[in-house]
Length: 352
Image 1 (tube, rainbow, N blue to C red):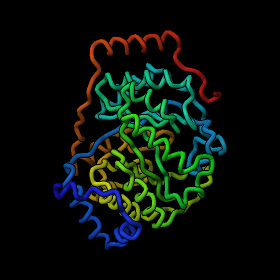
Image 2 (tube, helix red, strand yellow):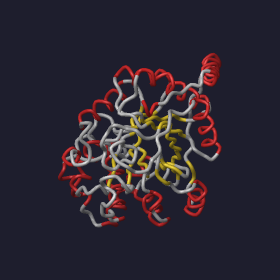
Image 3 (spheres, one colour):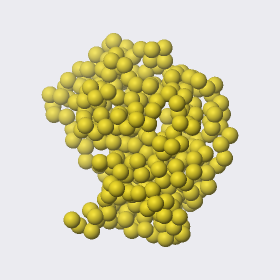
Image 4 (tube, rainbow, N blue to C red):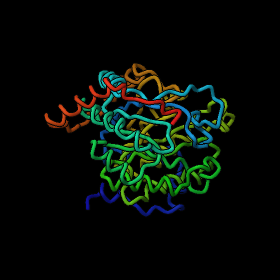
């Protein structure tokens, strides 16, 4: 076992993780950066673009989410997007430097009639040479297998917070439900993207508890998004107190130490972070971002601002190798996309 491999563990204790959070700030960042350099180029950041392919009317009661139909946030419901429109967005994302295209739908879980639409999207995105990612809610084993067969690279399903604090935020889906979906995704051979949200009123112990759940999985998530709560008027957490910026950076650093081989992603909340905080997060071990002006339904820094900061920091977007379909499969995908256009390949998912 190499020295680097010996850092990958699946048996972190609450006491160990709590002690990391309690380290002096500079000591914690030094430790996180030292770990980071053993597994990644410290001057590269993976760039993804996220598109909402179906917005609003979600039946869940997640207190942070403007897409829940239980809260009046002024968000307009939108139909499931046409396949061709999604692929146009993917092409634009690739042209601006994204290497992974993520598609999110506000569902509790996809229905059988949804699956042909989303699998066509996956195949089309893959054909462009982009990595594909989806977040569609809970998945059965059969649905995960269907997405895997279509070529899906990553599936996002966040744990959100610790098991102990979870019931304060969500009651319509259990923690066990989330773990089952992640297990189904992993068993289907799809890479896992799973993280959480900080700033929802949780304690440091809860942040530690979230990271323990993720890092003690049999296989660490390949991507770990750390979201800062975006307070949206009309949601129950709209008046939540701001999380201290240093506490957010500490969470990034501890995630890097606990999951040294994973990409740690800066996700929601970046719009509120200044350049110095971004730079500190990259130093703490964050090496992935969502790129573009919108993150599902909330604002995100403009793409050119990220590139300008990358240039000032000497950071390069990470190159990714993506396996393309063979010629026969490419032809079948094109036929499917054309058929989708001809049939007006969408329905009013908000009413489903």
